[in-house]
Image (cartoon, rainbow over all chains, first blue to last red; front, side, top):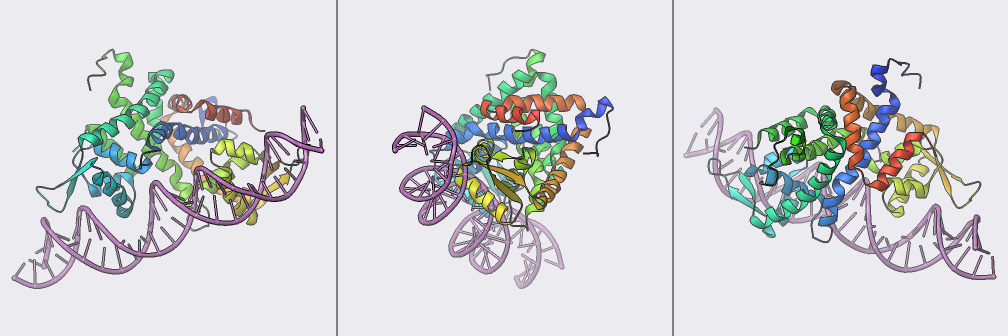
Length: 166
Length: 166
DNA sequence: TTGGAAAGTCAACAAGGCTGACATAAAATC
DNA sequence: GATTTTATGTCAGCCTTGTTGACTTTCCAA
């Protein structure tokens, strides 16, 4: 309570209350963020974990299993369960590496691409609408704060995707 | 691909690529957002669900179970399991309503307050550091975009907390 | 007095995390 | 060439946190 006696207006955004509001904004916004894809996936045999896999494979075609593991931050057992069903259902294809044949390079099939676009379209619609409502300056700020909030290891993955893929 | 032929620079922030980057920023940032409290909670018998309950009870002392249900967006069975352990462990107290004695008004005990502050402190430290790194203008934009991303029902809960209490 | 809302409880289940142990193939190293 | 390391896959089992459905108790309000 008495920790923030700073009333210089330039630091008002560091007020305890402001920071708490930011925390709650993240919580509520994340729910909106996942709501549309979740709705699409319920009824299918898939969940949020499948969405994430399909998203990042679509983003970086040919990515390896271990790279995906690092990006998603889960165990290989957990990811494997997801990838297995996606491959069984013909949404994802694993091609043996040509230079290193231990590696499996992951690609979306045509069918997988259809689902990816369906999910992505819904999520992008909401994001685009939020962007439009807030305006370009707000979007820049949004991205800056989020980037500063990431763990350094995650920021590396985020940045790598910036450039466009392997 | 051919959907965004708009090259008017004022709308560049609505580029498909920009929107996708925003989606990934949310994903990676949310992991950072929850990482510190998660670390504290592992080893205790609690998880993220307990954190959320303790957070919102601390924010709105005296809130009812059904209000908490609406804010958290889970089923009462799921919340009940969490509240039961918190009450058994003496972190949360449920007081029978004075005007409507069916209602239970939830409060943190002293012990509950200690945990709340511990978790909150960790999470606020990260948020504050991100705020500091990004600056006041970015923070305003961050909040605007997040708010626009929420479902209307969630935005109502978010706004109510703005004013300060029940 | 009675209907219905608020709260709590029991049971069963699913998704999606986790650990540990182990198997295989292929690359890298000695 | 033999050995070690790496990438991947798989089995088994556990935990948290979500779900639905059925049911009870309490008690406000019409």
